Image 1 (tube, rainbow, N blue to C red):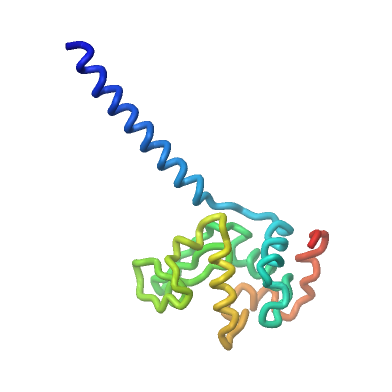
Image 2 (cartoon, rainbow, N blue to C red):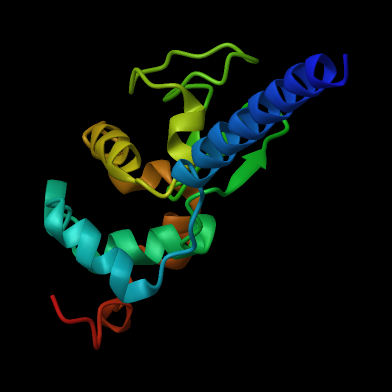
Length: 160
């Protein structure tokens, strides 16, 4: 019967379209973002990073720029087999779990959580990292490009 073959084909087509819609929604929900300097400054200020553990907001903005270029999806593989993730390039060997290499997972999160445009988990983990004795020296790029410098330009013009 002609009618009998069209219904299953239409049903199958609808299922495929529904699945594609769900997948696209998941991808969009986790979409990465490259933040502007002032947009990131505002978020970090709102999340209490200005003055956190003695580091100015400008230190955090400078570090994020040199670590990720303000890209929430930045990912970088290291020679030791670990990977750095997200806005602050948080390392899988110590701070998050990438399920590929040994980890202490001191922030108690999957590394992939650090790759979305919602950077609340990145911020929480960065706060945990900076509380360690190394402080911001844990970020090599911060030490090389930001430490001990006048960083006022990183927040100049931002309405905070």
